[in-house]
Amino acid sequence: MSDHPHRLAHEDAPWLKAVVLTVVAAFLVLVLLLPMAVVFVEALRKGLDPALEAIRTPDAQAAIKLTLITAAITVPFNAVFGVCAAWAVAKHRFPGKALLITLIDLPFSVSPVVAGLIYVLIFGAQGWFGEWLLDHDIKIIFALPGIVLATIFVTFPFVARELIPLMQEQGVDEEEAAVSMGASGLRTFWSVTAPNIRWGLLYGVLLCNARAMGEFGAVSVVSGHIRGLTNTMPLHIEILYNEYDFVGAFSVAALLCLLAVVTLVLKTLLEIAQPPSRRVGH
Image (cartoon, rainbow, N blue to C red):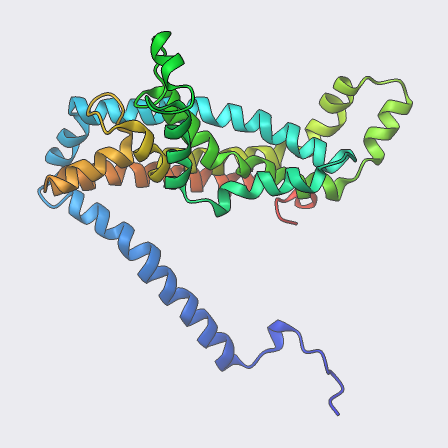
């Protein structure tokens, strides 16, 4: 019998490590790096000026503006919800706790298209509140409110799911000590809880922002595809591609990729900046 029955991963045979690393590298190249390279190559196929001109068109500018506005509304909302939900789950005991966790995970298992259809059935002209909304001249579907609602539904688990395990790992000892010294619940949160979760919160916000800007399915259903009004960047890319404006489509796609790269860089810098003991995922 071997003296080391439980061999560590770094003790695997060199050929096995080489095979694993080769598979990982090939997967990343084929699935991630190559498609992103194609996007930029196609965007610059006719030169830089046509690519920039495609981004400067009124419809593209409107799509970029709508995407940024949607993210600017969605991310703070989900940050507040995520903090409250994580605080409730990790720091308190109450009936229905398991149900709350299940509901937080629901958007991960529901198709974004189904989420969009749900809002159409509720707020559309033939929906539950459609007649009342028409009578009061309130427009949700085929307008910014519907796009924001659909995006919130798709993205709200990201912040909560980053904070729940972090708060559970930290426990409640520090909060209980602060309360025993006379601190109110709100002061305990700002003085004790918030500093301990700030890195996880920022990480969740970055992921939420990236998902909000790239959302297609749910937004496609509730937007109505009105050019210059309700098209976000992903929807504008689809329209340009269907019209065989490949330079325009890939130019806007390249801009969306650049925004994703910026998010990735910020995420990496965030992981480097935070103390080792508070690294997200550790």
